[in-house]
Image (cartoon, rainbow, N blue to C red; front, side):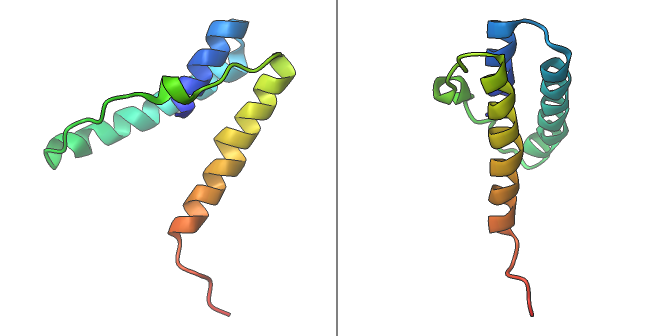
Length: 87
């Protein structure tokens, strides 16, 4: 999803270094997972993420989208996977 988000932003607003660098980091994450799919003979899922991405209205909104979707929402997702903290 993040890869699709940054592809959309770059396609709309151009090669802004911040977004290009984040897109490259996302691509490294994807590449790191590929050997696991092969090792465990899990078929790669079809990438339909582009159909869920919306285009920000301006560059400021693009940055806000990156922060919200790429960081805040991502952290919240991972926190749901963690066991509850013991007191």
